[in-house]
Image (tube, rainbow, N blue to C red; front, top):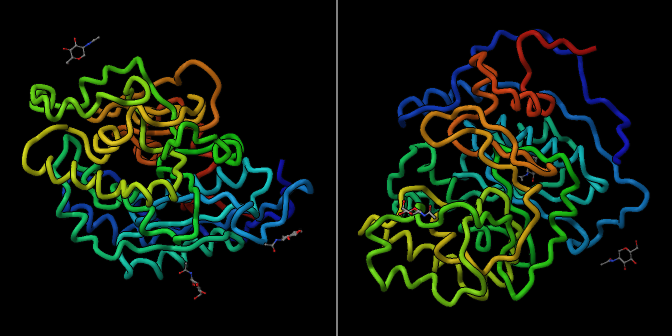
Amino acid sequence: MPKLVRSGGRTLLPLTLIIFSLLTQNGSTVTATMATNSNHHFKEAPQFYNSPSCSSINSSENAVHVAMTLDISYLRGSMAAILSVLQHSSCPENIIFHFVASSFAETAHLNLTITKSFPYLHFTIHPIQDIAAVSGLISTSIRSALDCPLNYARNYLADLLPQHLHKVVYLDSDLILVDDIAKLAATPLTEDSVLAAPEYCNANFTTYFTPTFWSNPSLSLTFANRNRKPCYFNTGVMVIDLERWRAGDYTTKIVEWMELQKRMRIYELGSLPPFLLVFAGNIAPVDHSWNQHGLGGDNFRGLCRDLHPGPVSLLHWSGKGKPWARIDANRPCPLDGLWSPYDLLQTPYSLES
Ligand SMILES: *[C@@H]1O[C@H](CO)[C@@H](O)[C@H](O)[C@H]1NC(C)=O
Ligand SMILES: *[C@@H]1O[C@H](CO)[C@@H](O)[C@H](O)[C@H]1NC(C)=O
Ligand SMILES: *[C@@H]1O[C@H](CO)[C@@H](O)[C@H](O)[C@H]1NC(C)=O
C-alpha cells in the first residue's frame, strides 16, 4: 500500500456554489453548465509515494501509462478517477497520465485545475487538433451525452499520444478503481490482440446492431473468421497495444464504420459499436472484476443497479445516471456512496483544518 505522508488539506473557506446538473440534454444547456463548472473548486489530493519495492521510473518502459479524456463537464468524475487510481496503486509515482482534451483552448485551464489538485502528478494534455473532423463523423445516438466528440477520443489514442508509447490503459471518467492499476496494465495481450477488455458473452450481441446490419450479408459477415465467438465488451476500460494499433491502422478501420453509419443506420449507440465491429472476437480477456459496469443504470432512465456477482477492482457508472449528479440531486443510489470518498469537489460546507 502507498504511504500517505502529507495531507493536502489547506484551510478552505466555505464557498457558496450553485451546483447545476452536469447531465444535460441539449447543446445550449451544456454551454451554460460549462461556464458554471469552471468556477468549481477542487480540493488538493494527498501526495502518494511509491512503496520501496517499486522500480525507479527513469524510462517510460516501467511506467504505467493511463489515457483519459478531460473536459469541463465531466471534470469531477475525472478527478475522482485519478484519485482512485493513485490511492490504490503500490507505485503511484510510476503512473503517467495522458489526458485528451477537446481543444487547445481548454488545456491551460485543465492544466491549472489538475495541477492544483494533484501537484505531483506526471501528466500531459493532448488536445484533439481537428475536433470538427471528429464531430462530422458522429451520428446521433439514442443518448445525446454519447454524441460528444471527446467520447470518440479513444479511437484516436494511437495518433494523439506520443509515438514511442507501446501500451496504454484507457479509462472512462465515470469510474473508480479499488485495486492496483499495475495489475490491469500487466494483462497479457495474447494471440496478437490489439486490445484487452472484460468480455460479456451472455449479453445478446445481436441487439447492438440494427436489422439493417444483420440483413445485409456483406455487413454481417464481418463477424465471420474471428478468433473466438464475438462478444460484447465495454470500451470504458481497455488495455491497448498502441504499436499493433498503429501497425494495423485500426483508427482508419473504425472511421470507415462511422462513415458507413452516416449513410445507413447500422447501430444505435455511440462510440461502442465500431469497436465491436473491428475487435469483437479478437480481444484478449480481462477478469470481470475490472469493469463492474452499468452502475449508471440504462441509457434512458438511469435507475439504480447492483454489482455483478464476483470480486470488484473497478466500479463503472456507465449508463445515464452519474453518481455526482444523483448525489447533488439528493437522490443517490446505494452504490454511489462508494464513489463519494473520491470526490474532490470543494463543497460549500466542507471545512478542513
Ligand atoms: C534506470 O535506473 C536503473 C537503476 O535504478 C538502471 O539500472 C537503469 O539502467 C536505468 N535505465 C535508464 C534507461 O536510464
Ligand atoms: C502546465 O503548465 C505548466 C506551467 O505553465 C507547464 O510547465 C506545463 O508544461 C503544462 N503542462 C501541460 C500538460 O500543458
Ligand atoms: C437476441 O436479440 C434478437 C433481436 O432482438 C432476438 O431476435 C433474439 O431472439 C435474441 N437472442 C437471444 C438468445 O435471446
